[in-house]
Amino acid sequence: MFSAFAMAPKKRQRLSPNELDAELAALVDLRARIPFVSQSALAAILKLAEANELPKVGTRRMVRAARDKFVAKQTPYGTIHQVITDKSGRQFEVQHPFAVLWELCRTSPAIAELVKSLPRSSPSAPLNLVFYCDEVAPGNQLSYRNLRKSWAFYYSIFQWGVAALSSEDCAIHTICRINPNMCATECVCAHVLQTFECYCSSITKSSQIT
Image: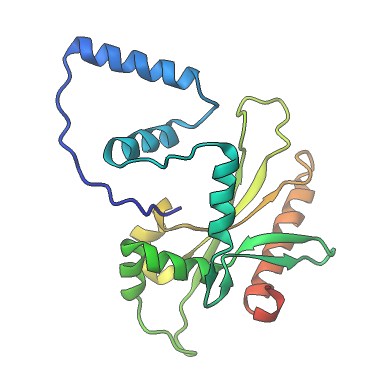
């Protein structure tokens, strides 16, 4: 995900050994009082809190409301989140690749510059999308059987080059589907392939994404 915050660099004052010990103890206390969050996510939140004023609302209901409001935003390609139907008739939400890219170009100067750097595409020299997926496990990482394990799908633009393709900041999330069966590898592979086929078919036929 791309941040809309403009983080101004701050000079850090060197802490004395006693001050450092106190800060580390406070950090341990903070982690003990909040639900599980990865170290990288917590470090990013702390940096944002140091450089910017954080939102005043912090309940789960308001977090959900903020997310729902964002994904319902209208773009020239429709809303950011749209619904497609797979071959079995099941419907699921996806993040439309062109809708979210349009929004990122509007709100992220870095992504806008990357898009501006692309060569002009044509039927004989089209831009190439690179899709990939990964299994993610939200919630308790030590759970014996995590039923929330999901497959996350991302895309990037091949012409951005190796440096951009190697950066997580240039991976644009499109789909996240719960893994239906953790034990059967064949079922997982079929599920991933069917989702990918349905998605690719839908984004090339705009009438199938509403």
